[in-house]
Every structure is written in C-alpha cells, then in structure tokens.
Image 1 (tube, rainbow, N blue to C red):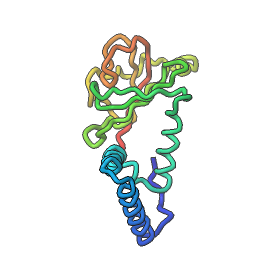
Image 2: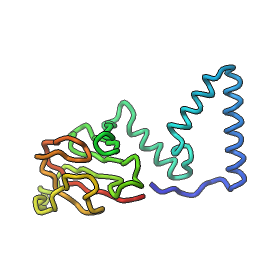
Image 3: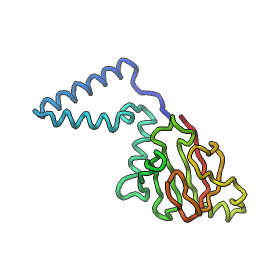
Image 4: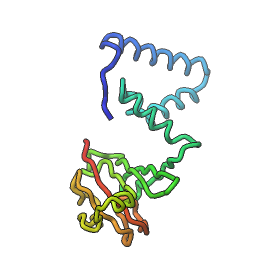
Length: 173
C-alpha cells in the first residue's frame, strides 16, 4: 500500500491534530465520565497505526475495511497462533487467501498469497514442477512461487489444508 502525499502541509496537519486532540478531550469531558476517556484510549491503542495513515494509504485501508464487511465474500480468519498472521479467505470457492503478518519486521514472509492452481494447470503450467512449499515458517524466498499439494500442515495456516495451492510471499518491511 502506498503512503501517498498528505493534502495538508506540516502546520495545517499540526493544527488539525491539535483540534482532534482538543475535540477528543472536550468530548470526553462533556461525557462527564472516565468511560469516554477509556474508550478513546482503547481506540487509539487498537487503531493507532491506522489513525496515522494519510492520503492514499488511508484510502487503501478504508477500501480493505469495506471489503471485510458482513455482506462481503471475504472472511477474516485469525491465524496468529500458527504464524502471527491474519488471513483473508475468499468464501465463494474457499480456495484463495491472502495472509498479512502482524509483525512484518520480524519475517521475510510479510504477505503470503494462496491461489487456486486450477487456472494455471488449465493453461499448461505443471505446478508440481514448482518448488515444494516449505513446511516451516521463514523458509520461503520472497517472490518465488511454490506448490503446496495439501497433504501436510501448511505452516502459515497451522493446519493441513487438503487442497492444492500455488503460494508466494512478499517481503515489504
């Protein structure tokens, strides 16, 4: 996701940030309780990195949030116990996923794409000739396509998937 350029210059950005802080404090004070302050602190703790985004990056994260709405054909899956990653599963075929690592600075497998190999095979690619998908985290070479035959525990997902995928990772941070 590109960060884009801010539409506000440095002084305008500082003024806007000050207004948001003052406004947040006023809202909290007007509520007459510490509940509003606690709620604001929880929002800042949960969404701090998102709140700091500007320009195109802000638009991008909103577009992704809209894709994960209740009526979407994407489902968010928590795979953090297995790999520290959040998964977005396409729910029509349940055969396409993308994982995003919550701590990309700790791995070279920041984003992992899982694609149904059916179209590749239909167009003549012998996916079995691709390197076998590693059975351990951290062993993928970024931008290298791998073949996963579904017969063993896929380390990012933490379970045996029982269906084939072509898989590629990106190292972006």
